[in-house]
Length: 129
Image 1 (cartoon, rainbow, N blue to C red):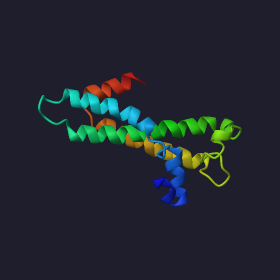
Image 2 (tube, rainbow, N blue to C red):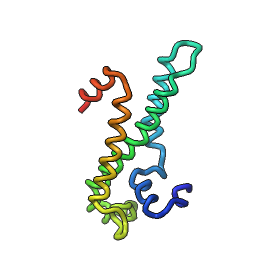
Image 3 (cartoon, rainbow, N blue to C red):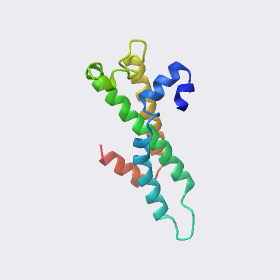
Image 4 (spheres, rainbow, N blue to C red):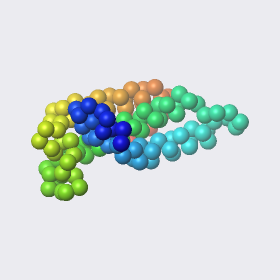
């Protein structure tokens, strides 16, 4: 796929965030887009700024979930055939400190998206913690 054309170090981060398997991002994003479309004034297009924020947020937060999962499961992933080649498991892959910096960046981007939304949404986000 398209990820194979990236430089190796960049590709490892894309693989860590599972950008080569976009179904998880779609499953987060499509209900957001559908709700935005339903909330639009009848006969008008949905708010493209919101659609863009939901796109960025779903890709970012799904990637953060995959990153934290790989951090937690790295010892198990070494023992499972299907997960043995993940970026945190291979010898010349991403180190734990590098993964933590990447996770912090992803979470920061997610927070940036949240801060672009209204106060009620921010309140709901805090309540969901």
